[in-house]
Length: 360
Image (tube, rainbow, N blue to C red):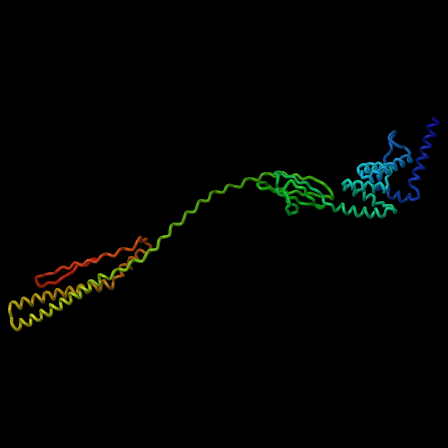
């Protein structure tokens, strides 16, 4: 019993001496930064050193092992050793090495936390390391985050902040820290928008499943337009009426006038002879010559009038026909009608004459 009490007293004195040793001359500075340090691990019975001196020795041992592994390029082993040392006895040097090891391993968010812990209590003899840590923290915080975008259906088009990406889904995007709008669209599907908050040197996955769009309404068939009616061929102008009937009747009229003139002169001569020497023969000759003259003159007058009518009204029937049916289709121009003249004598009880039937 006495032995046990003495041992407890020795442990209490040793613990007090160890605490004074840790505080040392700069006890106030260490106490001021104590809030930034993690609490040292509490030794468990039978699990490691129990005295402060033994804890300090174990922390130093792990710190030296971490330095050796770090220089050899074994950053994972060095990180484990530095973390063990730091859990036993937190120091700025331990925080600096933990940050360096995590930085080498690509654990950038954890490395920034360790760097900032080191920068909160940089020792005077580590001013250069503090400047390097400050620069490195700025570089890490400027690192883009990686966003892996998957979409259904595959090959959907991706737009980030209104700008299309170089490749469709699935795609790996590197985005600056901050909030970004991701737009995913595909033909036949309803587009979706996703907002992501990207932190520096982070990794995250975004999966988008697009819903099929409703089919468009079926448009009623548009009836085919009827072809326009064929254009009516131009109506050729009617052929002018021939002048031949007018010329023929005019020539016959002139001939009949000449015959009538000749026989009229003969009738006058017969009358003069009859007056000088009246005879039955002279009387008969005078009557016959006068009859022929009358007939010829009558034919000449009739044909002359007919020729004049035909000549001056030659185009009137064609013009009337054109006005009556201006749009009527005419396959071909009418053929000229042949002109026929049929003379016929006219004999009465009191005289005689001649006529003609003209067809054209």
